[in-house]
Length: 481
Image (cartoon, rainbow, N blue to C red):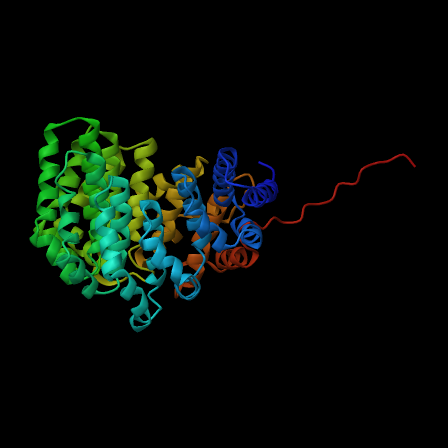
């Protein structure tokens, strides 16, 4: 699509808005707004955003939401939602208050959801909670709750758009959780897990960690047996080999891995209570389902990226043992996933030390120490982008550890590779190559690990930037005089 096609599209919309609402005009508006939605997504967003609103004000868009055509309402709501993304809650509230009230009473669920999504604009944690009073007043109002309940009677896609709004409101304050619990909306959410529709179940498990941002909400889900039932689903699904069973198990594994980062729990206590890590280890070692195996590897990496959860993994052992064994026997996509997981674990902190750094060294030992570093270097030097980036990520996280910096500094092949610029490498690889050296240079006392010559080269590399190319000698061309 030509760069300025959106200007012609906007002009067409303006002309159609001046016409009587005949069927062909309605169809023309539908097509034009569908195109505008695509153009906003394709970008450049700010350019299309400014061009649109300079010709079509929000008031005109809101008026179209009352059009006697459901398909037009849907397309206009889509465009309006995109245009409202950069607009703050303060501006929405001050400028469009009357439309908020009208939108909550609108008969079409797409418009009601559009209004509810504006309530998320105060989700910025830098905004004091006291400044969110207007937001909560709207969201927890009788009209808003009636709208939410009405929307929850709709299809799954509609319901989960509403749950997303509710969960983000609950993240702001426990009082919102208690309000929605008393209104029966939390119980309605829990019912979503009791379904034979795998997509509904996956959407449910996707939202659970979002809800667990305080002890209150976690205990509510825990007492409702959400995690117990999820773990039971993993066990039950072992006897099934269907696509839906695999999708469900993948979703549950991701749920448990994301719990490592939620604020309302102690990861060691949680993983001690719900023994998902041995299940992941078993899938890594025995599953013939590649999606499950890859997911289990990624989940071990995600759990290990959390300092408190890494301490649990180090004591539990089966997860890290399975990861090390999988790396040694892996190749291709599986090798890349193993490297990514190892990088996540090595990178649990920007300044690793103490017992957790020792846990990372123990994993390095399981990977055969210097032989692992040699193998990773070979993978990087093969020139494949995915493998190269994954390998460099491992090195970048390693050098943050005292033991890792020493190992890397002692292996001249990786240092030589890092210092050798090659413009034929992918830009992302060059960026990661630079990131490794930059990290080395900024590690305290790193200079002690290198000769003066190598250290000078490392610091110069950082100074010159990731894509520096030395000026090449000019070749004089003979020309007829």
